[in-house]
Image (cartoon, rainbow, N blue to C red; front, side, top):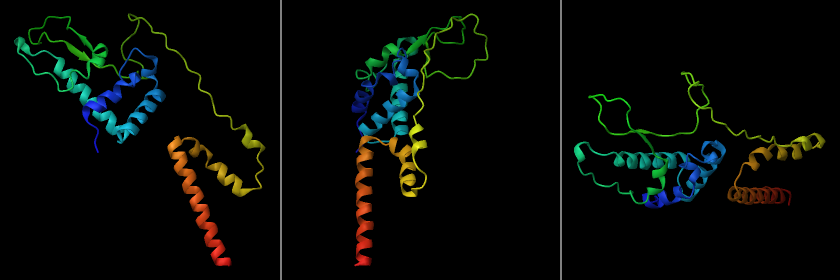
Length: 195
C-alpha cells in the first residue's frame, strides 16, 4: 500500500538533514543515506523511489510559490500547509540587471550537497568557508591475524563477517533464523541417510 503524500511529507519532516542546508549533516552522505534508508523502511518503498517522490513534491511546491505575472491569483499547492517547514531553506534571488526580456520574478536556486569538483571560475572574490574534517576510523581487523588458517570452516564463516556487519537488526534476525533452519535441515538429512 502506497504512503499518502501528506504522510510522506510528515516522515521527511522528521529528518532535517534531508532539507535543512544549514546543518552540517546535510552535506554528509553517510548521514543522508542513513536517513533515506529509514524513510524507505517507514514508507515500504525503495530509497530511489523515496528520493524521486520527495524531489517531485518539493519541486512542485517551489513552482507553486513563484508568483504569476501581472498579479494573477494562483491556487495553493495541495501540500502547501504541510510543506511550510521547508520554506526557510528555499533560496530565491531577484535578478540584478534590468533586462526587458526577463520577467521580474525571482530565480530559484536549489541547494544540493557540495560537489567535490573545483569550480571553473576563480574564487578570490568569495569568502572561503571552513569545512569540518571528519576522521574516518578504519575497522580493526588485527584480530584476524591471530586466527589460525588451518580451520577452513571457521575461515569461511569469518569471510561472511563484513557482509553480516552491514545488516540491520531486522535483517540480522532473519539471517540468524534462516541459518539455524538451514543447519537443522542439513543435519536432519544427514541423520536420515545415516540412520
